[in-house]
Structures are given as structure tokens and as C-alpha cells.
Length: 144
Image 1 (cartoon, one colour):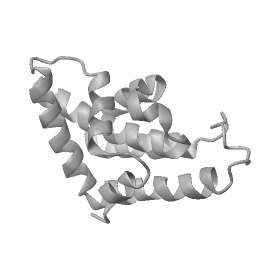
Image 2 (image 1 turned 45 degrees about the vertical axis):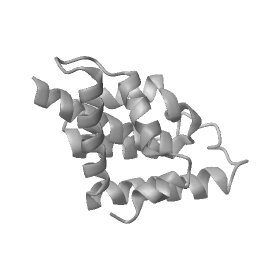
Image 3 (image 1 turned 135 degrees about the vertical axis):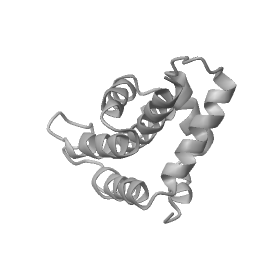
Image 4 (image 1 turned 45 degrees about the horizontal axis):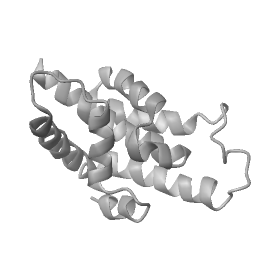
């Protein structure tokens, strides 16, 4: 939806990088890593086709472009403590996909920033972390 996968790709974020980050913090739930990766990737692709998730991801892309890249010397260039909208955006994506439990999963990805997450600016790292957290949390819930 809204070419979100293409838009992420234009920012250097491909499905392989998303999945590598997702699997970096994978906690086995009776499903081997290869099968889990496939199932989580299906959830990520499905989520990116949801108009609500897509619009939030596009919002993160636009905010990152405007407030981080265009204004590289601004006070938010280093993701300051007072910048909360990026966290809120990431949590909204995570909770929309995976419910309340996904908020805790979001915190794990937000703090550790595995893989591609450590290379993104303040909005995209949290938005992609939210996407991953929502999908992994949903996957874990289905495994229980």
C-alpha cells in the first residue's frame, strides 16, 4: 500500500535488513529460526499493506526527511531526550499490529537497535522497530 516498501528501499531499508534486525533479538518459541523468519516476514509484508501501518511508516519517512535530513544541524539531529514523537510513532505501529504486549517488544528493539535500526535516523529507527516489534509480538502470541 502507498508503495511503502519502495519508499523504505529508497532510504536503504530492504526486507532482508528488516528481517535481519527482527531475527537478531528472536526468542525461540518452539519454532526453528528459518520457519520463524518466514512467518515473521509474512506478517511484516502483510502489515506494510495495511493502510494504517503504511500511512504511519510514510509519516516517519516524511518526518525523517524534513526534520532530520533537511535540517541536519537542528536540535533533533542527535535524537534528543525531548523528542518524543518518534517513540510515539514507533509504539503506535507496534501496538496497532501486535496489541499491548508489542509495546514491551518495541522497547527491546528500541534499546538494542539491532542491524539496520542502528543506522537509521530518529524517526525511521523507531518506525521500523515498531513494525518489527508488532509482527514479532503477534508471532509470539500465536506460538503460545
